[in-house]
Image (cartoon, rainbow, N blue to C red; front, side, top):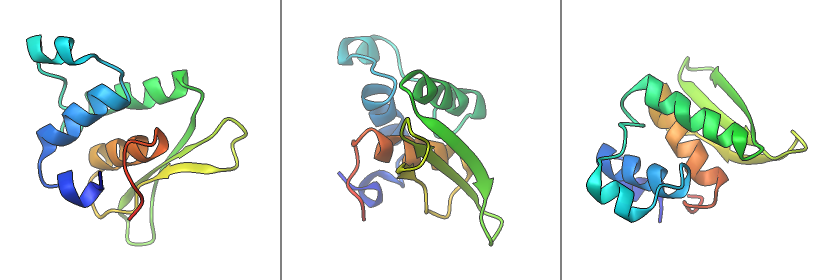
Length: 108
């Protein structure tokens, strides 16, 4: 799956993050709607915390156009595993980068 296929539907993003990053099972997601990871900063921060639990380091910054970027590194801290390059807000950048880092999205 590619980011371009889901980026315009925040609930699709949230469902994919819930399954692939947060590791919630589909039965749990059917009974309860997943948090709004791509819309609420508190929920997006849960994604950052989960990625830390998985051994990823992170960096949240602004690029040269003052757009938020999110990066996740592997355990050695040197290799990018996920990097949001999309022009989006911080919450979406965290979701995008985390999905790339866990291998749930293809690079574009």
